[in-house]
Amino acid sequence: MENHNNRHTCPNTIRTYSDTLLLMRFSALGDVAMTVPIVKALAEKCPDTHIIFASRPFAATFYDNLADNITFLPIDLKDEKYKGLRGMERLYQTLAGQQPDQVIDLHDVLRTKYARMRFRIAGIPVSCIDKHRKSRKRLIRQGAKAAGNLPTAFENYAAAIKQAGRSISLHPERQEILKTDSRSLSPRAASLFSKIASSAAPVIGIAPFAAHNGKIYPLHLMEEVIRILVSRHPGINILLFGGGTKEKAVFDTWCSGYENMVFASAECASMKEELTLISRLDCMVSMDSANMHLASLVGTPVVSVWGATHPAAGFLGWGQSLNDAVQADLQCRPCSIYGNKACKEKDYPCLSRIKPETIIHKIEAHLR
Image 1 (cartoon, one colour):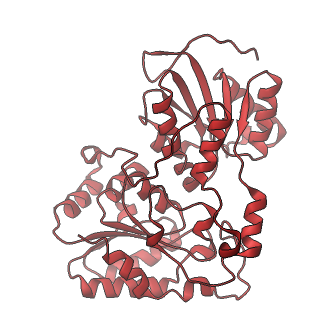
Image 2: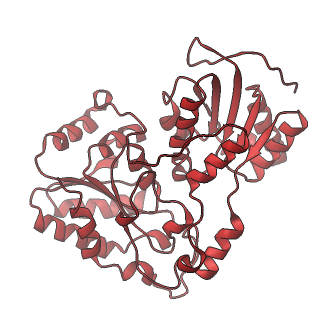
């Protein structure tokens, strides 16, 4: 593919841009959510650049209408056409069809490595994220106190952008990165939004699940958190966030026991609607999981619970305070960067030793 330094037209607007920059990140929800404040800052810093962000289809919620000079490119890697070596070549051809002048790989996995190679052969400048894998291994071996903090995921993204010759300033303050609009909610979500918006009582969200057991606070202890909160704050509104069969069964049981508790995700027709509800919370209680990052994007404070993982690995939500991170002080933490390793003690003492009162104290600091 031949690279031309001609002017590009962005399909989002009628405006013409001087160059096109392609960014790639195809990972899980939380990781992609963490790119949003960085890419938005880049769009504001480089208004004459057409930025194409390629990711899984769910990320359209983040990138549609984020900035006039950003175009979202959905690529469903679960599609059979992207499987195997032929699939990697097809992925490259799809990306190359955007005719980028420069490429930034924010993922650094086999598929994106292949695409980087092909772009280099085609003469397109490429830069790539440094995930500091050696430092992550040292963090696991030595512990957070000995190894210290790693660069945050946001700093890693920004460094990859700087490597491409485009620097941005990082100001991780809690703020509304994504705009929400309650006027476009479906009837059920609108009804719930109206209820919490008009309530004089506090409103909190609880997202007690995560992808791995090493991140999940024991459910019986989380239920104790709920019981104490309800007893101390009569009328408090609690919205539950999560999905899946297991989650639904737990949430249905909890909701049957408390008057002002709602399985909010079941009332929403889309992730965009969930974000609108989250924006109205006094605070979100979340594990080290995607909901921490969703809340961060709409400026909602998060009381985050950490077990096998650790904020020192660099995954605390954008603009969130380390003071709101609940952790047990154990030498074996962190034992995993992603929480996906089996516990040597079998019962995850990093989570079970966190007292409900500790979490409640953090929550109450945010109640209006």
